[in-house]
Length: 339
Image 1: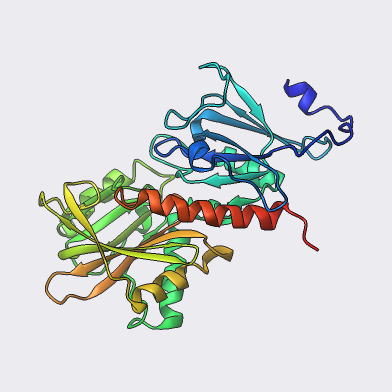
Image 2: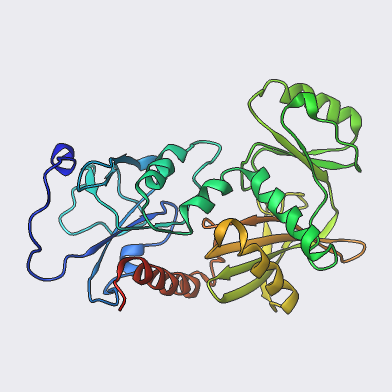
């Protein structure tokens, strides 16, 4: 099958009817995109065939000399997704994506899918968010550096970002700001690779641990006693704001028991999201995470998340509808002729 897809012969003439557009959805943790997009068509009438899997369960082949251009081999269908009719469990699927929707992190503590992303970039497949922005989001210092540039441009009062120190290795870990502090090793997400450091003595101990990871960078920021976290969500032109309060006493509120409620998305929060949406050529899906200082009520931006931003369970159905509408808009712009 692979050999036939990548043969250099040209494809036959156009067949009867309208062939479906092939959408690759990379999301293995939740949501059934074949059901969400059931019956959807492009503006020119073409139906959409949805293939859903995760980063570890696909391989990418691409060439510049064949009509196939790109071939994605799906090793395993996402367990959360409805498989196509007649699909046999465990059987590999080979497809050529016309568009890609990416909703999972490329790089996690347990898997690095950047080689798969590189293949999609090589083939130039249109995607949401853009593949270029997703590649840059694999490196947290690139994201944080852009946030600090936005702070310098807009002013600290308008776009306040937490102070940070970057070191390329243990040899340059020379943090000189306040304690307690939080160290973040590498570009991990969801609380992984993070540690609270109480004073310079513990920092010295941590430096010896970091020395055993010579290929990893590290960022340090002051630990902030908080009254809660903020998450500002932007999907296209739709905004939401949430406040999360931890209940278990753990300083990592994103990994402990907590309650998260929707609050008013003020103009200030919208300006944060709009500014972040201009990063790396534009972000279609994003969230801005911030912390509220306990004593002063001051709000400080911690980070921005891109295409893999999670949804609030109570709002997921509606928000996936917004993602669907935005996705169809992007697919029509990329795949349908105009004029």
